[in-house]
Amino acid sequence: MDRLDRKDLKDAAFDVVLRGYDKRQVDERLRFLDAELTVADNALRGANQRAAMLEDALSEARSIPAGESSGDSNFGARVEKILKLAEDEAREVRSQADAAATALVEQARAQAAEQDSALQRRWAELDTARQELDQAGEEVNRESDRILVEAGKVARLEAKQLIAQARAEAEQLVAQASAHAQQLVVAATDAARQREQSSAHEVHQLSRLREEINSDLYRAKEVLDGLFGATGALVHKRRQDSAQPPHQARTV
Image 1 (tube, rainbow, N blue to C red):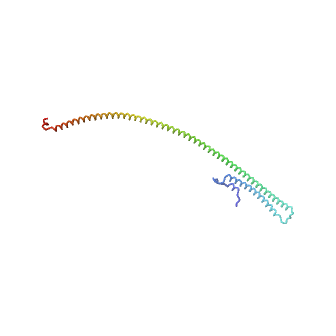
Image 2 (tube, rainbow, N blue to C red; image 1 turned 135 degrees about the vertical axis):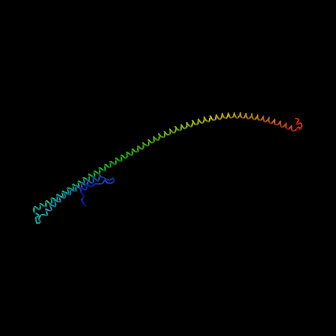
Image 3 (cartoon, helix red, strand yellow; image 1 turned 30 degrees about the horizontal axis):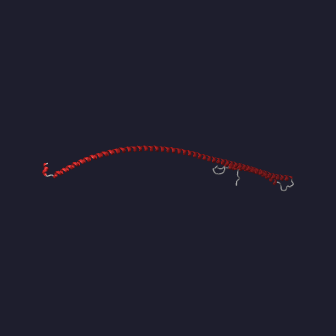
């Protein structure tokens, strides 16, 4: 696998989407990885330099003739130099490793502290949002109660107005009905009085008509009596005439 280069890390980009990773967290992680690469590059550069020094020392050691005595001062100096280089290398590697570890630990602590601070801020924001939500709920409840109270007042006022209006309409209807009834009573009284007067007049007319009829009947009776009397006398005379002898009848 190819080694990750810092340029690849810096050029890395993530699409910003609605649902996905937090861009701030991704940027923090990239900065952390970039710092690790910087430390690793420095350690690698130092290791390469020390490796080159060791290679030079080894090459110099290999160049010593095999028959050269170990007691030769030059040989001892060379070996001592190689050992010193190895000790320096080990000390440098240990120091850089400690420094890198310390840097990583400090960076991890700083990142953890930042994350903890961010978490605390989130909790504070959540608490604030919760308090605001509670306050909004209380405000909604108060507003609802106020609306209900106002609605009750309006309803009672409307009820009173409706009752007053209904009472006024009822009183008006009663007054109209009373006036109409009074008019009917007056009209009935006038009609009864007129009927009474008309009946008295009719009785008088009937009495007079009856008297006239009785008078006419009496006169008719007299006429009939006279007519019957004349007729009876004529019949009686004719009977007498028809009972006499013919010559007497002619002399007459």
